[in-house]
Structures are given as C-alpha cells and as structure tokens.
Length: 249
Image 1 (cartoon, rainbow, N blue to C red):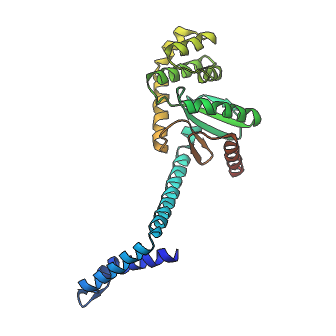
Image 2: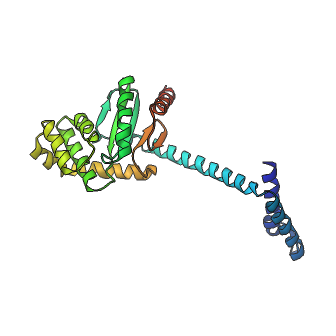
Image 3: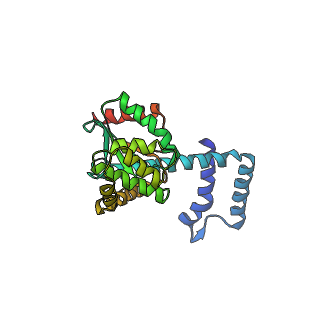
C-alpha cells in the first residue's frame, strides 16, 4: 500500500492541486513543472509496472464487495417474495428453520447434476425448507416443462414430477407428457392448467426476481442473505445453511 499511496500522491499533486490550490489566480504549477511531474509518474510506473495490477486488484475487490452488499440488500428487500410466494412449490420440511430458494431450468445440465446434491442435503438435514423457483430460460421446451411442473403441483404431485423430469436426459414436450402419464396425472387438466393466468404470473414473478437479484444463469441458490450463482457442492450448501441458521438464532 506504500507504493500505491505514493502513486496516488503524485496523481493528487498533478490533477487535484492545480484546481484546488490557487496562487494569485494562477495554477500552482506551470507547464514545465507539470511535465516534470508527469515524467516522474511515467518513470515510476515503468520501474514498478506491477503496481498497476495491484491497483486493479484492489478496485476489483471493492467492486465485488459493493456488488455483494447490493445483492444482500436486494435479498432482504425481496425476502417474502423469495420464500413465501404461495405460487412457488415447497419441498423438504415445510416448517424448516432455514429456507433454500433454488432457481433452475429442467434442461440445464448443471441443474441436473446439482439435483442429487440438493436431495442428499435434504435427506441429511430434516429441518430445511426448499422453495422451487421455476425459471425456464433455455427455450420453449424448458417453458413447457416448467408449466407442466406447476400444473402437476395443482394435482399434488410436484415433487414426484420434478424429480422425474430432472432425471430425464432429454427434456421436451414428449418426455414431459410421458412423465406426467407415468405418474398418473390427469393430462387434459394438466394441459388446461398450464395455460392458466396463475402459472403465467408465477413464471413472470420468478423472472422478475432473478432480474432484480442479478442472476444470469441456472442453477442459483439463495440461502439466508447469500446468493450462490452456479453449482455448489454439499459442503458449501451445508456451510451456508449453518450460517443462515446461526444468523436467524
């Protein structure tokens, strides 16, 4: 930080002082003096080029902290919509003391891979409440699957349908309807419910939430005041659950 302080001092003298410190209505430095300072600065950077990398790293760290703070404030502001939306299916223990919110797409390969991790986490910790946020961002087949899942929820078989479709290698209209048929769902009712205004509103609400949180892909998890974009292993999820549980207590 000593080298950075020296560099910032030079920059201040060169750029701030002439505008902030006036001597008899004239700039503190004449053109020759300004050029001398510029030469010192240029020579210093040539001899210490790594200081530029150091400054960039510090800037990135500050930006990351600012973005993290913004996400945390957004999570707090949107807490009820994330965790208590009556249109969002709930798995795990509905009365659990910690809520995990998952944004996912049935055609997302990373969502499929992390599904087993989430399932294992729920089996190991019986006090987790899981809120499913259907977020079909990978095309028409993804949207068809999401609508069908929310329609299956109306027939009381969301969890079974979710697990079955998430386990399919290929997700399209045919495979989704085959899954519904295998689970004994009422297909005419399913199709009718898929077009309902309530399901349309749920998908729109999830899209808006993802946008406000700055989520750009699936999967994404919200646990406590933390947002985890992308895949996460069980140890990471368990650590965040423990942190959220500690914060709640």
